Length: 298
Image (cartoon, rainbow, N blue to C red):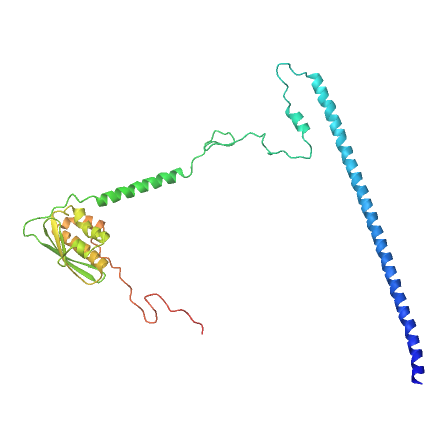
């Protein structure tokens, strides 16, 4: 009895599957028809585009043809009116060269036929008689004059003082004290051959730097007694640079003791000025004299 009841259900399922297959085939046929219609439309549009391009080419050809036809009869008429000379070959004119070129093409170098118009310096570009004045001429002259005056002043400062009159007796001694920073120099000038004795050593041994040696010798060189007076000095405190400045200050003061008339020239050269520059003291709360610790907001 169970087998007889199952057979009608299988018979009902078979017609349903057949109907679904038919529906799918109908849908496929519809899609193929739509694709064929779209391809037909594309072919029609391509045909119309080709026709439009053909018409454009024809119109352009029709526009260019009358210009060329008119140019040829004009050239023939010019040739008939002005026959070329037998000895000299006829050169094409500029108008003919312009006509030969295509109207759409640009010249290779635009503005090549123009003449160069350069206005030289000092000439009025409008052709007027008024001339321009160089605005920098006065400044250059002033600068040249200032440079010359500075050079003259330097030459005057380098030249030795001719009015120096120092007593060079055998027992003459001129003593003075010079200072720079924390260095102190006790200097004694005496007649001699121009030697320096600094703390029992020569100048080159105590001051190996050439710049310091040159600064120390400046006072005696300006007076003109660099080879006629010896320098004996005792230095203490400070460093090498500070001791060199103190020694020069002491020699200058000793020369002033020898001849008070040298004050103006020595002061003008800055030898009598005590250099007050020194290292600034450290402040509380700072790392150095001015340097502050990094700020922290929190």
